[in-house]
Image 1 (tube, rainbow, N blue to C red):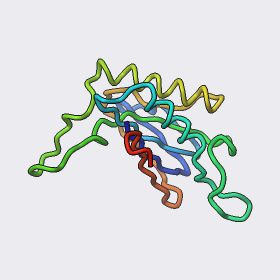
Image 2 (cartoon, helix red, strand yellow):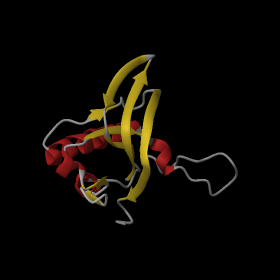
Image 3 (cartoon, one colour):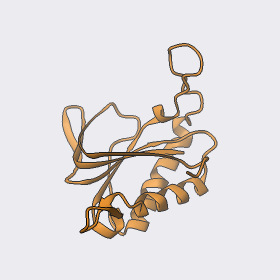
Image 4 (tube, one colour):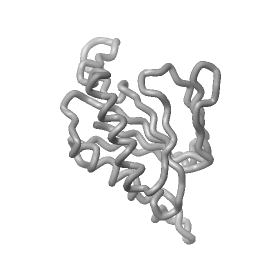
Length: 150
């Protein structure tokens, strides 16, 4: 399981030309699920996400988390995070989990994040064609892979 985290000033998701959800500032998280993923990957990444110190303290040092600051989180499914570009020029998504496996894990990740954060997070719709608009803050972009644990 991989998450790509972007610190944003704002973000919103449009589906079928209608705004579906938005955040005013916080973390935009793209979540990629692969066939080998399980509950332990969810627990690791959800805890890491809410506790990662990506926001400035009063000294201007990134020393505060979304949990510390009350910043919002938006989670968007993104199977392309597991693209392999090893052969040729067309990415292969063979490692990405199929929807019947990925949807329950996506929903569990959202639930676990909300549980640890103590409030709701914004989302897109799994499998929908989405337009994600954001204003990057920093920019700060972090990739975390639950298999590598780094």
